[in-house]
Image 1 (cartoon, rainbow, N blue to C red):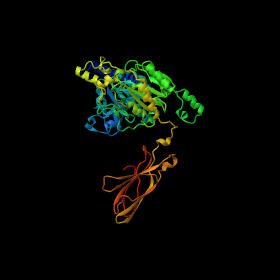
Image 2: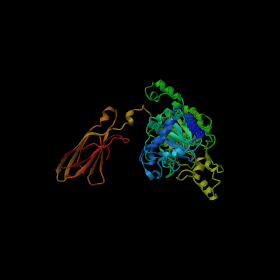
Image 3: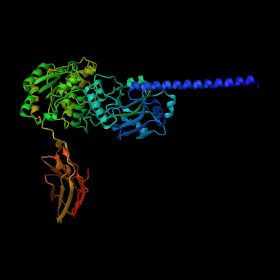
Image 4: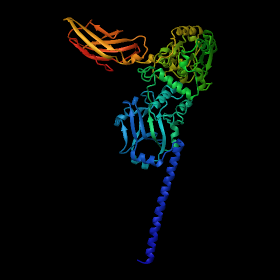
Length: 605
């Protein structure tokens, strides 16, 4: 080989090596540039810092991790590490690796019907959450992910245009879901996936966190693939008290788990966020002088909700004058259309009475002070007993509100709007026979949600309130208003189990026997001031389906009636403060009437 050929070969090798190195450097530079861009996108989402390379490596190596609470999709909330969302597919993505965690691992049952509800409205098929699955290796062929470094709460708002739904379905559940998990603090970010715009009450959602909530439509602005480094998906349903009639006609939930104490805790927190203050209720109730109480009475006033578009009170001025004369109080009007929400709550939070037509604005009654009265007005043909979200709220234990309703019974005092759009009660689109039937009806029959034309036609009527009947209903209702005394913790405390329960039996004759049951008071009773304590005893003959109940004032009793010799009985004992405050049973001791024995204490039957 000639020297020239050798030099040429070496030059070609050197140039090739340099070109390869240059291409690798260019590729690395492009990768770094893209990584910096992705990091910048993450910074636009949050002030929290994130090492993009470490986050990407963690996703590639460990994949997505999920751990959920709850046995059914209706009570499940899941925590995810590196749950991703494809804005192209509009689907969440779970990336599998050898280190992935998926608890519960439901397999195909995850689609029966869903992993969980994104909303607090139970088992609604538009609120289901699920995800697609991919191997983590697929990330090599996908757009570079943008990482969200904030802890996020991912949920659906059910109807952000309606104030009742905003509070009952969204704000209350989100507030207490965030209380349930310590890292869902004021720095957490809410992500709304239902697809609505901000809506008229978006500023209320902003009160839950110091960070701006994200809407589904905004996610595509940050990239084709977003990955939430830590997220919680779903909402607690424990704070909801009403079902809207999707399966059966609307009404209170069968198993209400929230009390007025939790509602008032939430209301107070929101008022603090809105910089609204009022006199401490504990100071206001008891402990003040007669002079101070007289001054407080002079400062009392009634708030009336004024509506300007639909469901009007046609003689509102006359109603206001009648209230002022009857109660010798100032009457103040509030309006969602004309006032800011904080200014409305400032008024309502100190009102002695709130008067309003049935409607979403009555959800603000949760901000009323203890001892206030809620007066709900219903248009003609609308049965108050069938539509009770605000009555249910007002009468929750611990709300300490008095509830009264008035219903217009005079058809001539109503103005209907048959030519309006259907969603505002119009019926012109219906067949003539159906229109005539609705016009002739004096009572809206029970119905399912949500587009019943007869219900919409009647609820959107304007009403001329019959002042004499209104005042009569109001005066009668106020007669049953309980006096509000200083709240005592003991009034909401349940007794514990009775202690040292014993059973003693004796056979008197072949046909006669006695059963003596004795016990000691519950441990917590000695620290409580309770006027009256009683005990409930159940005695059941073994093998029988019925039992003999007894309410006793003392801690021991000898039973002889219906007690048979040589027969085994089951005995339960529990303490009662009143009909609403029951202790757990001290238990079912299998007791044979030939001898004596001990009644053991257990929590449940």
